[in-house]
Image (cartoon, rainbow, N blue to C red):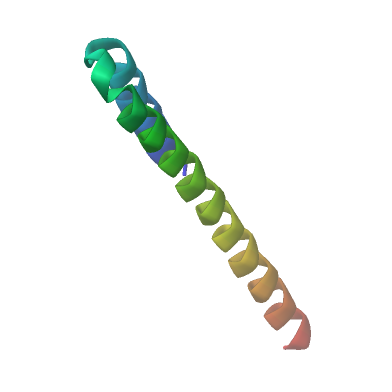
Length: 59
């Protein structure tokens, strides 16, 4: 997850400083979608961990 976050932060930073001001809404949208994607990936990783822990207890 860390490489994805690093790449997303670099892209958002680049767009924030080097795009025209008319694209500020798209930069904010990209940042929001990045945060949402990272949160859902974290939730999925936790659910996989929880499911594997429960299956190892029942075995």
